[in-house]
Length: 213
Image (cartoon, rainbow, N blue to C red; front, side, top):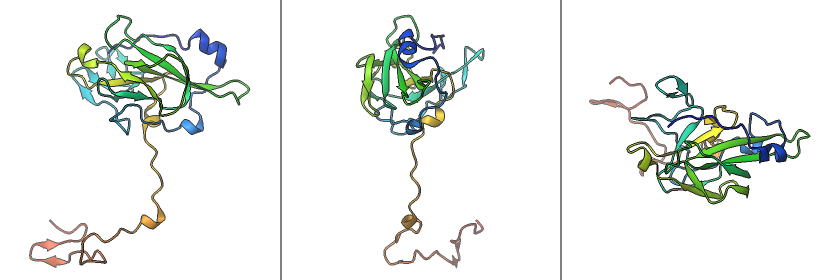
């Protein structure tokens, strides 16, 4: 898909949230929630005949770069808010009225800052339930639009783009909890072998790690 220029923020956003915006999201939003139903890890589209979904992938036959990431999402799937914030208006990404030319801005205002800092992301190729108002992390935003109708054979996806065009990839990764101390030793793997004893050597070889094969 084409990458088109948009105003950095709407005049509404400037009025409400001020003029200075933090490049990085607030601490509680360092890891976003699941964006699309059926993709709990926010897996990014790989490569298909239309291109690749990673940040920085080639666009326009190598003349441009992808300034967002494409999060895999089946046509018609439910889309969720990656973080709590303010919906601040629609986005027309293609400006041609095709079946996927819809989306919205989601912003997080931080009113504890004297400069009213915040964070902004664009979610494109979805039809939101509404374009304005507040929303909570994990709450339904809308539905994935029929991308296959416009790009047959593509890996259907939501285009996710930080408003400052920084790389959102790390934010999409799920939180991995620390490995619990009590789980560092595994339970019994096989009945009759309570100590998980490892196979020694026989005529077929040895069972320890790194044994010749």
